[in-house]
Image (cartoon, rainbow, N blue to C red; front, side, top):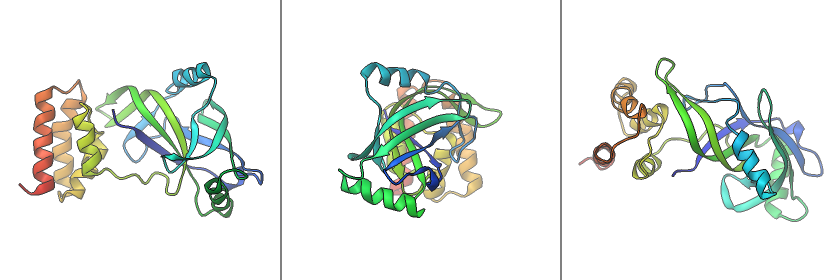
Length: 219
């Protein structure tokens, strides 16, 4: 299973001198650059699971699990999205102090969730993936929100785990591989769309991997 991310800008004014900060980690009913829409309730179960553990997801720097920089004191869903209040450990963690300074200066302004996808539905008419339930692993402060590109590596990783990228991710991958926008849309629309309607069979995954290898190596 591949860890996925979703990013959002937030205002530097929400960052206090003592390292306390707040903002929306994700917004509902908004089609993002991947063609995905997160629906209200997507975080309900995972927040209950974290509460059952008596802890919160960590605040990381750029999704690096080796660089925790703070703690969340509150995470909750409201009508707008996933709202969080946290604290950067500026007196104890050097990187947290650096990130705090960058946030206050407005040099960086992104929050991004790291999660596993549990439940979703695909809306063919709107060409969107509706995210209904996630397993939230962490929330990061990031340098460039909404700037994670689809690559040959992560598309292959998804396929190897029996998963599929979203249509927009696959189209980006095809564009990076040299296909025109029209060609990428046609290939993703006629092939991947059918697989997104149900679970991919092993033969379909094997075929997709063969195609990806051919595109990547020029074989």
